[in-house]
Image (tube, rainbow, N blue to C red):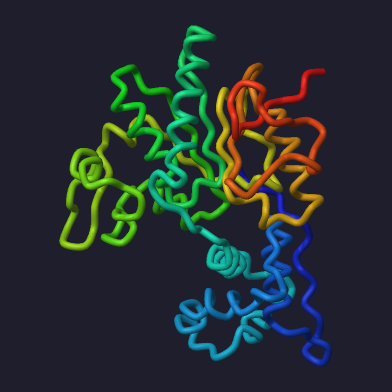
Length: 280
């Protein structure tokens, strides 16, 4: 689904141009609802170094000149991709991932059909692959998993499902690594096709796009909310609430909560650490 973006960020004339990092931070917020805190503005310069080098530029201010008028949408996409925080790992907060898999199986027993699962903001794909491994190992038919992210680059990597030595060792026990990944070359490990056939990857913007069609028994949207500005946070939570099936559960990051953010969700009365829709 193609996102419908707001109007381009206004780039003032060169005589009144603000600091380049401010303009590019505004571009990220406009596109994704994510805001880089002022005390972390250094991350903009760091994240964009590869792009500056590729374009033979010296300063981020020069990027704003290339963006003036909003004509170069491909460049804007590159900038936003680089500024997004794609921190992730296999079996991150392993107890909650295992609880999520258990919750999905419980939904199947309750409903008599395969659970529908949405991994929102999946980054480079370690989270849906972690779930896929758990389902493959429990012996029952694996439920389908929809994995989405706003970043084109991240979704492309997730579909490829190939990870370097550092990435493969983060959270993945050696026994699972040897069972579910094959060495593609000396530095890369590729996920088993058996895992990948259960996952569908799609670009999706939590802020700009409607929720995927249908409802879900389990939604994972972890470590995204605290990057969003407050009004976007409420909007995203309400959208996630609308995408939950009756009895469905939402899993957020360890430092995130719905309390004080939305009136449509509450802590689950059935499973600690999860959230459910407030009954009408």
